[in-house]
Image (cartoon, rainbow, N blue to C red; front, side):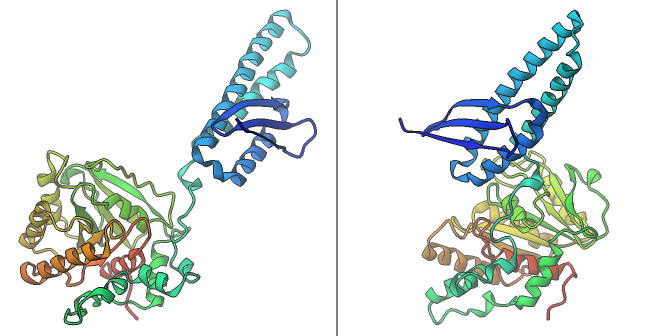
Length: 381
C-alpha cells in the first residue's frame, strides 16, 4: 500500500504535527507539542486542511477524530498527573494545572472544528447574479432565463408569449438580489414555526408561501433563494414529508417567506386543516407558489392543490422544479401540459410558469426578482 507523508507546521519552535496518510485512511497521528501552544497549532492544522480539500469531508472528519483522541488521552493524563501532584504537594502543580486548562481549551477548539457553524458554510459559486458575468453567453442565458434554451426545440406554431411575460432587466435582477442579501440593517432569518393558525406569528408585512407535493424540492429551492445568507438554516432531506410545520422566514421588513408542509406521501395528518386555514385566513398573503416536479409532470395531488387555490380565489404561480433531472423533450412535454392547464382550468394563476433548478441555480435569479416585485419591493424599470 502506497504511503504518503506530510507535515503541517505552525511556524513555531518545537511544534509540529506529523501525519502518516494511506490511500484509505489516516493510519497514525503523532502530536509533538506542548499544550501551551495548542491554539496556534490548531489554527495551522485548520489552515492546512483547507488547502488539502481533495480528500473531502470524510478525510477531514477522520483527522479530527484522531486529533480528538490524542488530545483526550493527553487531557486524561494531565488530570491524573495533576491529582498526583496535588496529593504529593509537588512544586510543579501550577504548571500541571495550566497544562490541564490549555488542553481542555484545545479540545473545545477541536470540537468546533469538527462541527462548523452555519456561518462557516461556503457560498455556492453561483449564489450571486454578478458571478454569472464570467460565464459563456449561452450558459449565462440559460441560468437567467431557462426557457430561452427550451424554446429552440419548440415548433414555430407554439406561442412563446405566455413564457415571456415577466422579463426583467439585469438592473432589476441586481436590485432584487440586494433584497436577498443580509446587512447590518437588513436581517434575513428564520422567525418561527406553527402547526395551527393559533400559533402563526402576527406579521403585517407582505407574505409569500411555497406549497407542493412531498419531495418536490420546496426546502431546496428556499435554500437556493437564501443562498446569499448562509446563516439562515433551511433544513432539507431526501426523504419525503420532512417538513411537518409551517416555517416562517423574515426578509428584513420587506416580506415574509413561508415553507408549508408537503402534501401527498407522508404528509402531516392535520395538513388539510393547517394549510386550508392558512390560505383562507392569512390576510397579508400576496402570492402562493405551487411547485410541480418537472421530471414527472403534474400529478393527481397537484390537481387537488390547484383546485384548492382556485376555490379560495387566491393569486398563485406555478413553479416547475428539478428541470435538470429530465431530458429536454420530457421537460417540454410536461411544460406544454402545464401551460394548457393554466389556460383551460385556472383563473387566478399567473400565466407564466417559472422554471428552476436548485442545484444549478437556473431560474433562481428570475424567481427572486418576481418575489421582490409581487411583494411591492421592486418597481420594474
